[in-house]
Amino acid sequence: MGSPELGWTALGVEPVSAETRTMINVDVEKPLSVVLFSGTDDKLTAAAVLVVGAAAMGRQVNVFLQYYALEAFRAGSVHTEHSLSWDATDEMRRAVRAHPGQHWSALLQQAKEVGEVSIQACALSMDMFGLEQQDLDPLVDGVEGVAAFMAGAADGPVVFV
Image (cartoon, rainbow, N blue to C red; front, side, top):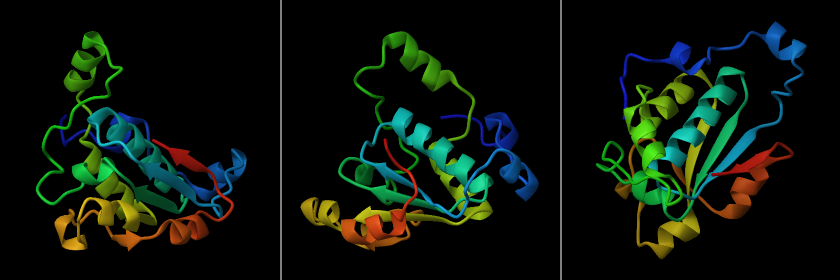
């Protein structure tokens, strides 16, 4: 879904200096936690843009994969085309597919390279679908329960995608 040569600049995101973070009053001590429960390319991309933006600002990011997001993160499945959201019109579908931005998996990999990003699969969802850690792409760091995720979320914002 896009050209790999388009990176941070194409997204309008570059690592942000401590001075800039102070000026815009970003509390990087509080993690951003993203609950990703959809496996559609548009939602995966939207989540990846949030993650890479937060990582570029120096924020710790926790991604929690639940339900249908797990399918997109299966080993060998990350780079296959996943459907778009049911509410996307034909015009929107064409625009999303034609956009030259980076694939969501490349954005997540960049976020991990530039910041403190953890991607964890939900233990309950893994059990529900009969999956083991080795069934998932190496982008996924591990498997954890909801209590561990919520403890890591601390008092930072939690976003559902």
